[in-house]
Image (cartoon, rainbow, N blue to C red; front, side):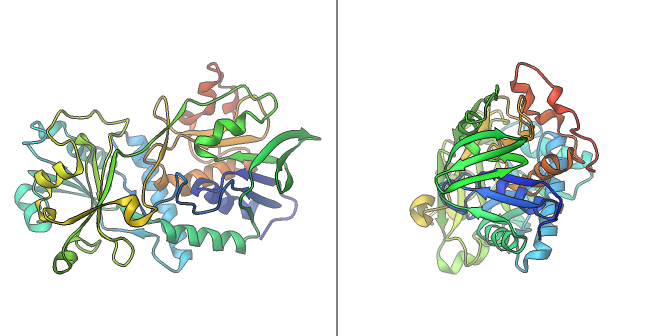
Length: 401
């Protein structure tokens, strides 16, 4: 329910970041409106898929800490949802000498060291232990992030839509922003269906963020964003008699990021097969190896799927294709927009952003409605793209009022 006497907030962009912002903002605001140019849950949007990884195994301890905090917030949401949002099957990073001869330098070993540093739950598997526990793989070592798995994206979207209705949030679909003006200390956002006036504005428009910034009078900043997506994304569909070996009850999320591979188990009743993608994350140096496709990975590291039916993800589901908005310096963008009052943004989520959505929404809601956030987000400041000016960062990292 809206809180009388609070601020009015408009959120431009109804993907997961915008919906999470509205969820956290609604108890604090007089009114919250979300403007989505297409429709919530549109398969063409960056925040849609069927499953998205939720893991803590980053090389950067800062991101690992934030991922674990986001997990805590996901679990709070799940407690309200009445159905699973997080599927805790773990995340297994693989290493094999015939692929990456120096095992100690692999992503599996280096990210595991970060989990150790932060004292997060984890497991180290030798080749023999890996064969016993996960015989689906052929590798010399595995490093397991135990508090990990994947998000059921449709379930999360359903929960957020229902929660926003219950909290009195207005979600306007097919609401293309035509103009933004400043009037008497308020922002007026014009759409084809009318105008919305608010005291604060949050922009979570993904790759369309710069288009919205261009409508802000006097806004001096644009962000170096570009689109990206996996070069391959396929479902491997095992024979019916073998299917049980590849569901979330038997198989973790898995990755060999040194060679651009990530994968999800079959989500029973939800996805048709084991999803394997081929993508080179911007924060991982690609190893020189003979793995140049998802098929190469299966031949080398997952022979249990040899002979499985293989279909392109887009053809099989029409939906489960990831697309990303990358930022030039490979850091998130979240904070106040420099040069304009009471406008905040979150963008540049890379291929890793979905798992952070509850945290990002909480931060943006706190910034817009409480003049600060309990989190230290200085490294993500939008001001780094405004000629080095950092004055707009005042209040970031302070306690919410």
